[in-house]
Image 1: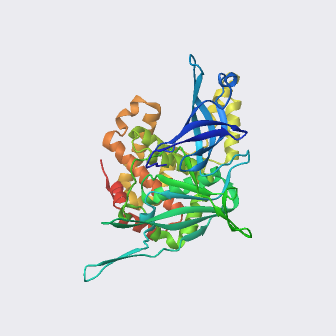
Image 2: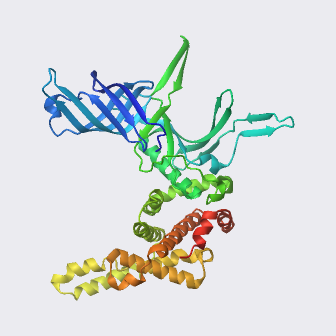
Image 3: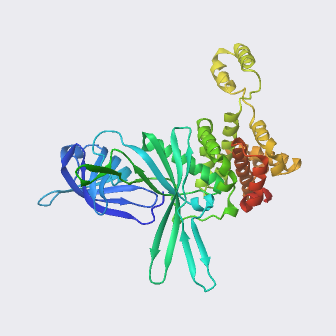
Length: 467
């Protein structure tokens, strides 16, 4: 996740089971969400601290400007004891798995939330709905009107709700007035959920948006609310009210860009407007497909989230992803399983005893269809988008020969292996094949796919590229 300004706060920290022993320290959160705590002193006495003790667990604290904080999954990274002083000085460096700013979950009770909201790159551009109207009058005066939009709410099949929340901020000075819109994604649940449960859904939604927008996206801010943590307002003894506390969540995420990404709607594979009437159904199907296709999804998006990966590594990841995708979406085999098992038993029975174990291992996956068959079947429904029969045949053989060479480095295949610009071309085509298959499996109509291709210059350039 992106941290636009380094978070560095001083305060006091303690173990929930020993609130009387409070250590001064500094909590730091850097871009990417990595959290580190440095304390003067240790949470354990010297006899324990000198041992190979790493795990700490949960730490509570109170820091400047923010108040209460809970640190989860903590472990010692470095313990230093300086001798030779009148009073020996000890310091600790502690790695923190997750920081909850604004709340003290001081008990051993599991941390759960009722809502979790997150902001992600390009959300406003993807939704394409503005609540800001600007009118210039004949006398050259300007009227800026901001009318808050009612958010869209969708029911998810996992029991959660997703809401697009339209937020606004206003800043003015002597020479400038600025109104900014920001659309948040808000997940809520009638039943309290753990951070891990929410973040699994966040990952799936962010990957869906990454597919739609065509770029790797970064999460900018995550906040949550919990009925376990609330502010009590008591203007009158007989009229007590609770207010949910916005708890900021920080955790380390692999992707972390320096600047906010901007992508115009012309560069996106598909926009919210294209699927607005069917969005709930499409998103739910995407989330449900993770039960089957998670390995294929993870392989594909790993290439998007690591754009600087070498072409050879990217190629192998993409071809492995396509193979996994086909294996998870079809049960096709070379022959019936019962027939294959009979054949295996017949072959092994004629094998010398000492070689039976080796032969059994060799034949274990013998009923799987070949990679060539898998690639052909994946491309078949997409031929009209990718090229003519001659080009597709050449592309398939290049994929097969390159994969076999880069996997086994068989010298006989070296000359038929794609390299340089040719390898780059194959990676682009496999990326397109993934995108088209995802749209097909999400029940996009042929007309919607045609519109996506027509309106997306990046997609067309991938289709048209020839080395």
